[in-house]
Image (cartoon, rainbow, N blue to C red; front, side):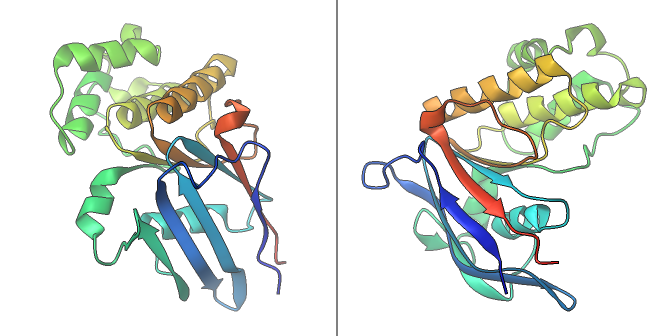
Length: 226
């Protein structure tokens, strides 16, 4: 049964010179009677972005959840900096930032308050730093409005601000371009380029091209098993 088409690309960074941050070997995952993928392997070094693509229902979100440790695969192992995440779960959870389909903000708190609360769960930040980040994602004009009145695109920008301030080495992003306009797309591309340049890494599931520099880019195309 097919699982994934494979990994790689012209932009893959040399593993001999870059530390491998996250590695997966022999992953297999089933949903009921259907195998989403099997024998899936990947190795993502620092300073790289893995673009996970494929048709709807092929298992992109499921793979990201497995890599986060949110779901357990039937087979295989995931390692963070050479150690199984089963044995370094607390360190691994602090090392990655997750962006899923739901934003998870409190409706009555303002964008500014939601950002301060979300980031405080991971680290301390100064109000000036948070304000600068809100400016970077284009939310200064609505920063003091309750989240319930923000548009879907504005909420997505706020989620991205949380990712930016997380100080996480690894970003795991599921369809980050959802509800964003062209400027929002460019903003994410610039975020990813900057994150890689600073030694971070990212795994991004998206139907769209990421727009990042080719030297940072790896590819994993998922197959629809039917």
